Image 1 (spheres, rainbow, N blue to C red):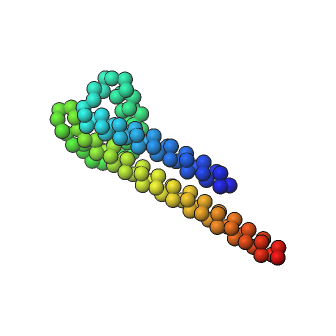
Image 2: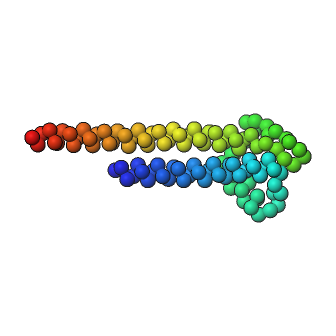
Image 3: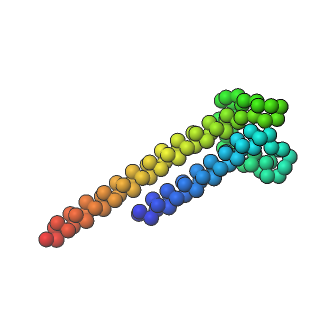
Length: 115
């Protein structure tokens, strides 16, 4: 069963890394007023739109110029996803820890009764 927990930990690491990368790219591109007509910028914005949609409208973005702004919603999204990732990771770590403790207790009991 330890293998499934390790797999879940690695999967959550990868998923959070991708989410963090997409949101960070979005913040940087908006901050630098990247041209939204270019394919890469369009892709980053469209891929990250779903990630920020639950938080859209919470806070206004800070305009730095006519085209550049600080995307506060993306930053808030990143923080919320980081907290959720931390909680999920803590739950999986706790389950793995409990399983390891149960296995050690069982092995100690088996070893004690074998004498």
